[in-house]
Image (cartoon, rainbow, N blue to C red; front, side, top):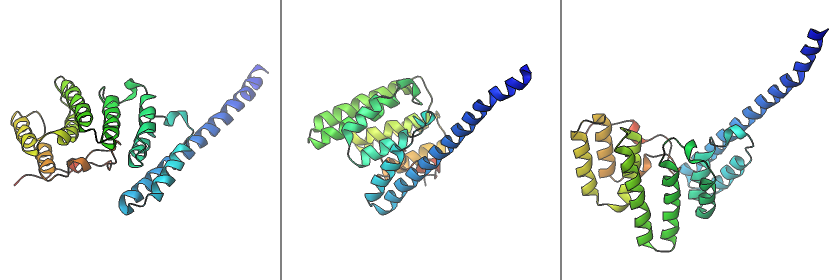
Length: 220
């Protein structure tokens, strides 16, 4: 009899598990739809897709998706120039949930720098990016991390002359720290002024998620 009761006690948990699975699947579908709308914006430059994407991503109500929605949300705040709410959203997230220790500061400083530009305050803008460059450089002093190197040159390209950056990249390549093809791709991208299209949003940035640098080409 005890075993009989035990089986029935498990039924509510099984039902709850099924409902949770269905909710997760719905959230995944919503996230995919939001990303598709965002992709359509990149293709058409139609701001209606931004509003559609934001409405969908804001409707996602799964605790496990709190950080899965980060990149589309930040991209939308950036593209819609809603820097104040973007900063509030990033601030609300725990620093140790980011992939690298400097990344929360990276997104925050990027948004704050855009606010500086809106006020035509180039000194403020430069100062925030310079602070961020130093933070990422400190991380790279103890980590061999090519993705972090990409982040570094996204922001260095905002404040330093291209010639200086190309000289630095050649110097880093000469040390043999990173894959040669990737370093060549980084060099070409900075030289051609297309580097900012390699990094996912900050998502920062309204940037596509597949970096061009992931498909390196050899320098001729």
